[in-house]
Length: 356
Image 1 (cartoon, helix red, strand yellow):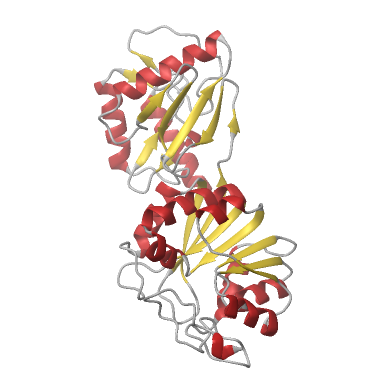
Image 2: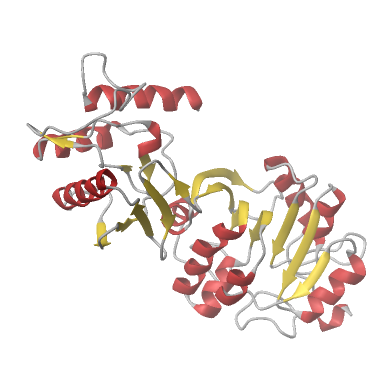
């Protein structure tokens, strides 16, 4: 069975015929050894016991088997029939399937608690193009609660994408719907100089008091306002402020709008820190346009991979503007002496630092 491995390898792959990409303990050395150590690292990063786990690009199932031993209900998927046959023979326990990993397949997937997507993204980019791979990354957040992600990057492997490991974090921020992304550093397998990213809290739908927020096409967010006169007023104000701030990098871009919704740029996960430079430029832009946001809080500060972005301008005002506002707007980050965006940014920073 092992001699059949590699016959379906993607052109340019580093796989050698007859050699498994992952090692099989007690049976065969692999192109990449210490696969069980990587599975153990995954289990250190997130509790897999009792969870449904998809090992996307499972190869011969060494990681799948170890996660199964740790109490997960594991499903392994790979495009290579021979690898799946070897997995069933040498790493039994998980359920294995042969599938072409592409956008139609990912869109058809059921929901999993955890998806482990390691050392496959770059091959998908090589085979289908980076844009296709990024569309898959955007879609995958709709099918799991947590994504464990790793990919080769610049000067790493025979199918690199043009990103350093630090820039992979930026790629995830801009092209996935996860609101929490953590770079946990390199594997502990003494072999792979790649970072492991834990992505959580996918934004599928946020149903607020006045509007519903959903992801749109890759890199876009759709905010649909409810059927009331006040909600429609908030929609018009949101559109107005995004247009006023269009030339600045620290606010979402308005992409399109209709009678009830606005489509804007996706700006990444929740910020965990506000660089002083970003804080200064946000305040300068607001002052330049004579805008007071009035609702700055950690929930309205995102990180797009390059800078902090301030969102949600539905209750903002221009100097001299008079609008309705609830008594608790901006609390607990509002200045005791009235709305003050600089004070609210400082309080938000203090809250973020307490969380870290």
